[in-house]
Image (cartoon, rainbow, N blue to C red; front, side, top):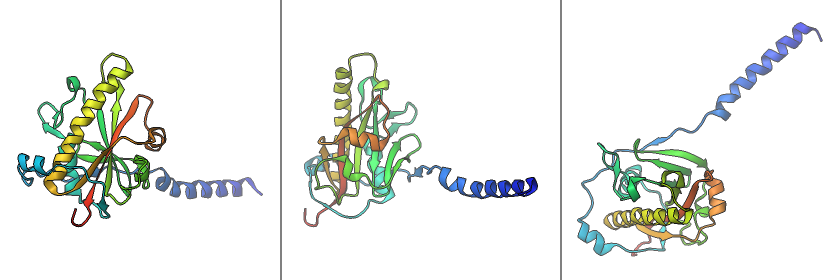
Length: 220
């Protein structure tokens, strides 16, 4: 085969490969959520009255508006001038990241951009716990501590602070769900190694807990 023909064949191969590179190399883009609506929930005392744990869920997804409201209530920014959040954190380290597992994939909640940043594709909701009762629920929140954001100290001390901060966020979720008639349950029985691998967590990230949110069973 002549050198000129080899050059033509090589150029053709490079062109064909370039057509496929964008499809395989293109990263999924963040999902922009609508602005949270803050004037639709029931009064706090009624939400406290209705707050409860539910372990039965109906299948069905949550609207993006509901998801935006829920995540803002959980750990959104309620003081834009300072970046402070709806839940307290030790020394305002804001060490907890909120991940959202849906049927479409795993996402990281970005409170500044009010967006969901893709982390992993595919449905990995079943990895967020060892039970089966939440298999029909719309989403599973996964709380992850970033130990690099917490000041000096032993890891046990850092995890104590992270656990407390997780509890504050989870209670916000409970109250939002009570106000909107959604079902939720807080969970700690998780294969953290397996889930952390699927979420592509870094060595200094620790899963603290998970929380299922979804539509309640009829009559529950």
